[in-house]
Image (cartoon, rainbow, N blue to C red; front, side):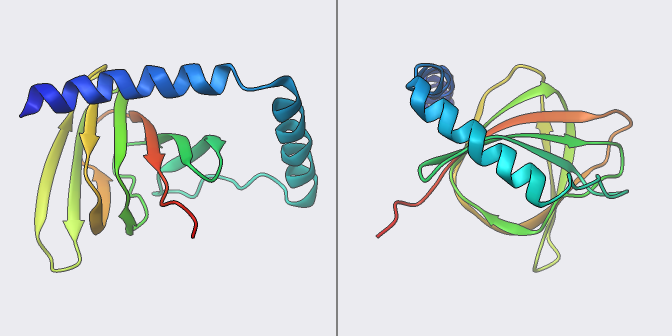
Length: 144
């Protein structure tokens, strides 16, 4: 069961990266203009102490690509998570606390690819002694 998921994950991430890299120049120019407008409209948000830093690398109606950095003790937002592929750039242990109080731990090994099914809301927390950096590709629900 692990091998098909790992195979799908190892094929999905490079395929998505290739698709984004080959986007038309007009689309890239339009996205750059939109980003410039957003940056002028609102100053960059500072990372809050104790909160994971989320850097959105790409976002459209089909997919969101993020780099999430957890310093030791940092927590992430408690939100429902869609299907996602995660590749740790720097691994470690994340403790997940669910709404019902249940706690579990997930070990992320540097370079390993994980495909995770949609989850109900939980709060992730870096319980290790070093930073954790995750490259996350989230698929979005199609708009109706």
